[in-house]
Image (cartoon, rainbow, N blue to C red):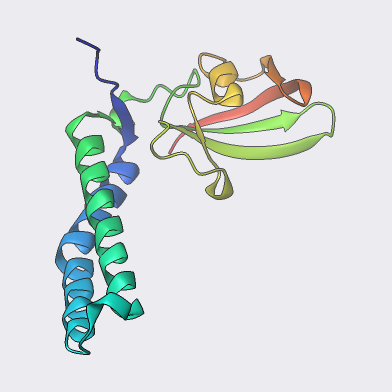
Length: 160
């Protein structure tokens, strides 16, 4: 039997998923049920765009609930106490310098479930995340990307 992939989550990521799940189950389900009810009251369902849209929204909500349930069921929580700030690992915040462009960047290393580059959260499974894991302050790491080889110097490692 195939091994189930663990979903590595930080405390913030776990809290965000639990809040989203609660909102979907309590609020969004009720909202879409009301939309379906109102659309049904309009009569002929075969040509009712509002009904079709509401049913599709309902499917999307149920799929997301199922997805979050699976993530939480296989979650492995990384707490701040688990984070050693002497070496980069999941849960750390890192400040790195792009050696080519002399630009400083800050990222939080998270599991793939939480990754969101627009919010400065990169996955431990991404090319940059993989290269950074295990590195120490002052070290320079080389990352192979589709754009070529990139070098980053680790300036700082902190807990959350």
